[in-house]
Length: 370
Ligand SMILES: Nc1ncnc2c1ncn2[C@@H]1O[C@H](COP(=O)(O)OP(=O)(O)OP(=O)(O)O)[C@@H](O)[C@H]1O
Ligand SMILES: [Mg+2]
Image 1: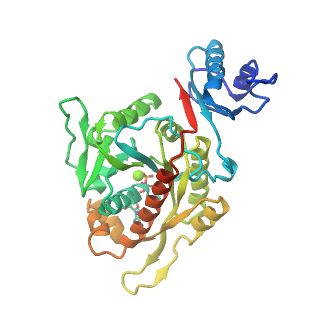
Image 2: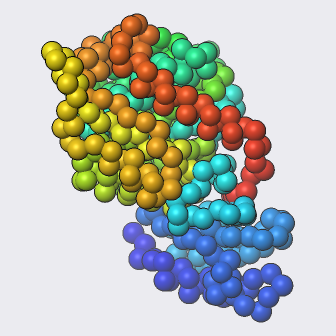
Image 3: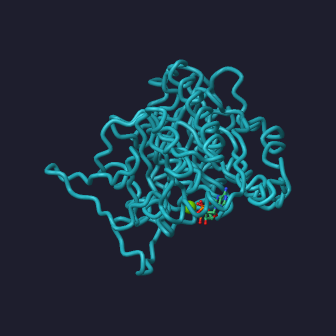
C-alpha cells in the first residue's frame, strides 16, 4: 500500500514548469484536481491552450509520480473548462462532458442513477424509467452495477433467465419489455454470499460493460450501488458518463447523502442531470387523501440551493412496490396506472437533456493520456 497523499503529489508536481511560464504547474493553477483512489492517481490539468502542448507535462507527471512509488498508476486528464462553467456551484449541466472512460461503440449515452443513501429507490426508478423510455421508442439498456445486491433481474421479471455467449465470445443481454439488461445477478448465485474486493468489483463492472453485446443503444442506464465510496467513484471515473441522476427521499438524512453523491460526481466532472424525489407523498388507496409521510419538497429545495434541475416527484405507492417485487414493471408503466405519468415526466426530462447534449455537439474537453 502506498503512503502517498495529495500534499506529497503536489510537492512532486512542483518540479514541473508550466508551458511558457517560469512558474510550476501547481502554483500557476494548472493542476486543478488530484484524485487518489488506492493506487490510482488521477491528475486533472486545467488547460487554456491546444492540448498537444501539454503532452510533455502529462508525461513528466507520470514519470515523477512513478519514480516516487512504482506501484502507482497515473492518469493525466486535460480539461478545457468552457465559459461560465462553475464547478463549485455543481452547475456542470451541458457545459462539460467527460469522455475519457469506457463507452462501447454503439452506445450513445451512459447515464448513472445514483444516491448517497441506500434504499431510496434507485433500482425502482431505473426499471421504470427504462420502460418509459423504451415505450417512447428509444433503445434502452440497464446495467445493474450493484454487485452486492443486484435487483434488476427480479424487478424486470428475469430471475430465472441466464445470458448466453455469442460465437465471438460476447455475453448476450437478457431482455424484458424492450429493455436490454445485464446484471451480476445473472451470473452469480444469489443465495451464496460473495466477498468482493475493490479490484474484483472494478474488473467485474468493466467486463459487464465491455464484454456484453449491447448492440445499438440510445441510453444505457446504470443502476448504481448505494453510497459514495470507492466503487461509486471508480465507476464514475472509469465509465464515460453523459450525466447522473440523483435519487433522494424527502428526509433530511437522505438529502445530506444526496448532496454527497452530487459532490462525488462533480469531483470527476460528471454533469448532474437533476434530482428526483422518491416516496414524495402518499395517496391513501381508500380515501385518496394525500399524506406527506417523510416531509415533502426537500429535494426540490436542495436542487434550488445547489443550482441543479429538479426532475420530479414519485409518490409512495404500494403498487409500485408490488409491481417491482413481482417483476411486473409493465403494470406500472405500460398498462393503465396512475403512476406512469410520474416516471414519464422524468424520462421526458432525461430525453431533453440528452437531446441538448447531442445538439451542443461539444468537442471533447477532456483528453486522457494513457
Ligand atoms: N415510490 C415507491 N413506492 C413504494 N415503494 C417503493 C417506491 N420506491 C421504492 N420502493 C420500494 O422500496 C424498496 C427499496 O427500493 P429500491 O430497491 O429501488 O432502492 P435502492 O435505492 O435501489 O436500494 P439499494 O440502495 O439497496 O440498491 C423496494 O422494496 C421498492 O419496491
Ligand atoms: Mg438498488
